[in-house]
Image 1 (tube, rainbow, N blue to C red):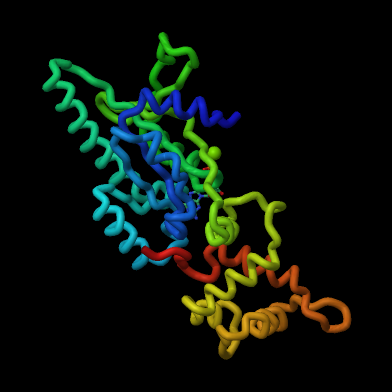
Image 2 (cartoon, rainbow, N blue to C red):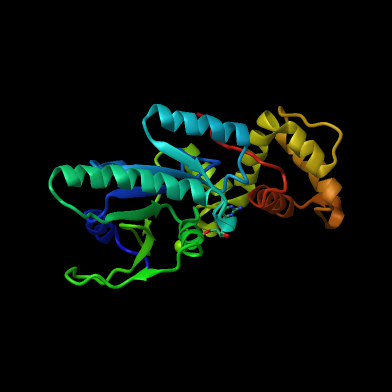
Amino acid sequence: MAKTKKQIIEDLKLIDIVVEILDARIPLSSKNPDVEQYSKNKKKIVVLNKSDLADENVTKQWVQYFEKREITAIPMQSNIAKGTEKLINEIKKQAQEISEKYKEKGRIRYTTKVMVVGIPNVGKSTFINSLTKRKTAKVENRPGVTQKKQWIKLGDNIELMDTPGMLWPKIGDENVGMHLAFTNNISKNAVDNEEIAYYLLKYLLENYPNNIIKRYDIDEVNPENIIETMEKIALKKGCIMAGKRIDTEKVSNMILNDFQTGKIGRISIEKP
Ligand SMILES: Nc1nc2c(ncn2[C@@H]2O[C@H](COP(=O)(O)OP(=O)(O)O)[C@@H](O)[C@H]2O)c(=O)[nH]1
Ligand SMILES: [Mg+2]
């Protein structure tokens, strides 16, 4: 069962380094604004996950964006453990800094504790698995805390809490909800797929027209007329109902699914 917000805040009290997992395609919309508040005075690492689905150049710009804010952001593809090495090295570097601080205070040995947070479906479990596959050593349950927690050893004096903190995104403005729907980060029945696909196609035609032309084998696209392009795609892909009417539902689901599985190419929805 997912931890409650209260439990997450409690857990974070034990933590030195917070690893915030974001979706590389939508780093702003996949943030939970509370993380900043909860992780004050802690070190932070941002993981730009699913970077295999994002536009490589844009992801580089995001890394710089975070760098300017003195946050290390690491592009990853958790499902194949790509980027894991770099991530571990960054954790080790930060853990070193932490233990030096403790040494100054007279403590000889300090175990740095790391926790993963992120919104649903962003890849938290996959990320933790990508780390545990490397290092399977599990640490004993820690006595003295009310809840039993499992810790995964990541290195000398570094432990990762094995359950991530699942936090909800803040769907304040409409764009955020739309972007989360594009990437399948909000529950299916909460959204109207035809509306989502319309706005996704609009964005793609304005920003990645050639990807659409290539994927659906159409001669040209008209960013001014989304419906026209959608009809072209439907005809090409046989999304037709009786009476030769366009099957809007079918073509919408196809476009969404193609985008989410990377079939339209590597696409970033948000740019710094
Ligand atoms: N393409 C791609 N898919 C990923 C990546 N990381 C996770 N996923 C997929 O994203 C989905 C959600 O992952 P999961 O770890 O369950 O997310 P959680 O809800 O945050 O724990 C799963 O289908 C994963 O296989 C990645 O880096 N690239
Ligand atoms: Mg999970």
